[in-house]
Amino acid sequence: MTDCIFCKIVNGEIPAEVVYNGTNVTAFRDINPVAPVHILIVPSRHIDDIRDPRAFEDDVLKEMIQVANQVADMEGVAESGYRLLVNYGPDANLVVPHLHLHLIGGRPLGPMVTRQA
Ligand code: AMP
Ligand code: ZN
Image (cartoon, rainbow, N blue to C red; front, side):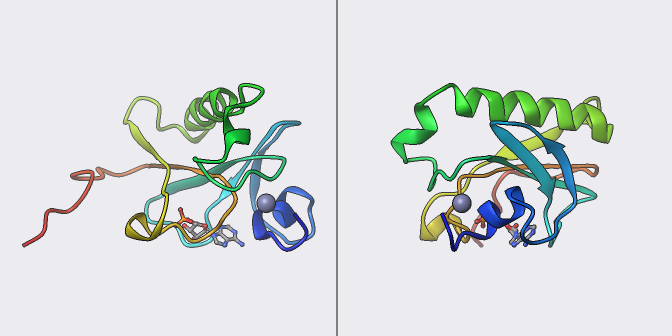
């Protein structure tokens, strides 16, 4: 996709701190991290989001999770723990329409979702 920011990162057209560069999957540091470790794991070819049928072809999601675990090892958070999450739609605040898995760790993350007051 020509106008997709994550496609541009995968293709090296805009800078990012890439930590894993594979044929099918790429991982890079989030530009606005919420924790000491915050890495985005993306398919190297464009897939819109978690509801895109292409996400279920070629074991791409499986490989994304395998890469996430491998990056967690590299980042030293395998023992302390980490969170993998995917946003979809406005209530979840999906911003970038290129499928991505957030790998977040390096500090206690607290409850998964803050309860409403
Ligand atoms: P989401 O809300 O799930 O769509 O998350 C998108 C994430 O992409 C956010 O955490 C942003 O900080 C991150 N992001 C946006 N632009 C860039 C960029 N150029 N490089 C790295 N991360 C980015
Ligand atoms: Zn894309």
